Image 1 (spheres, rainbow, N blue to C red):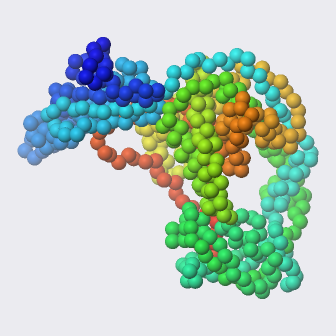
Image 2 (image 1 turned 135 degrees about the horizontal axis):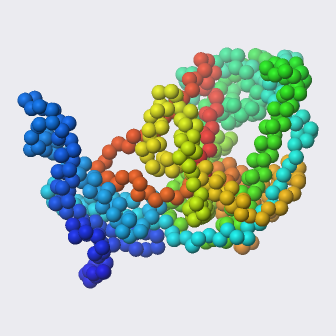
Image 3 (image 1 turned 90 degrees about the vertical axis):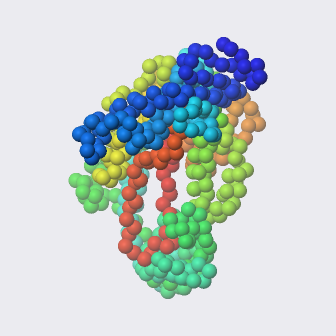
Length: 545
């Protein structure tokens, strides 16, 4: 190892003489290097590419494959040079990672030095954060309690009644009846912004169930107490992420006329109702419901065990995590919270509350990343794998969310992009690691009611809040992370995605448009004029592992 006294860096002689690697940064998990690729090596790559494409080039006056190399170089020289440079960069970065045994946390940053011209050596600046070295986690001594909730007739009755209630019908109320929560109000309306009616903001005969949450915040609440033939002006503010950009975030008024108020009719869960669903009778419906409730209870049992397991792992391991991974995870959490805040009755107050707890959410991100790395290390150390057959099934399942024309594009995208494949693979891999740890743990069983099981999952006293809590469990003064935000509240089951070395994605020094997965086809809006006050559909929670 030679020392550059002027710059106080070390030059690695283990690489070929044609390529020089100099370490410029080694602080914590941050690494920096300069990598010099000689013009000779780049020209050699150009020659290789020239030989590869020459037989395919066609030019008037020459037989296929017989175009002279110098003409091919003249025609495609710039593209050949660029491709050769990119290939040399990819090989150089890969060699750096292999020779220095580096495991990047995220895609390495590669920057071509200023002033590079074809025919000259290329100097690259490479920066990255590496995954921490984690001692093989101990999986001995894990003790878990498995809470199980039996499915009794009472639970089945309640579930069947819920289904019946969802098919609720309504009957007209007296003209003097005042609408209450759960009632249906039929209205004509016209929306205005700054006193001017806007396109799509007028409708007739729209049925609104008070408390359903189907319309923008504040709209339904102001219908409480109205009677048939009432006229009223509703004051609302469109959510910041409302689908119509010209309305997003703006205050508006809706002039409404109440055509009718209807009261819900009690739904009966009987044979007639079951047959209306296409079943033989109520017994068949109860049997189907029983299986569904059993699945729900099993899911709750697993959630409780998993949170307890993750708590034990987090309490027993503490190591630095890559800041870039934490930042990416935090941004994902924050985006979810921003979306939820925009649908609150008072978005600004909700955002102010978020800001107060920003440090807690960052702690959540740190904990998620640490647990993701920990589970990945446990899985690799114990031979946990996702088979090719399982991966193919995952891809096909995910492809079903796209239309027929986009499915093949999606499949090709996942197969060609290692990062996309890793993201799809991560949840299944984590579940397999968790199942492996369940097999190793000493498990005791206790039967409880569903209510007690749900309470145990939410209970801080039982320490089942998992990686989302942001707690140091040994610190009695640690502030509890807010439980009202869905993005963090369920984070116990979602450590950050399994960390995979980012080197699989080719490094490049050319700004190219990355081909994205096909966008999901949006559902066609209903052909009606009553769209304006409707609440923007909530985004699906991020598919975190």
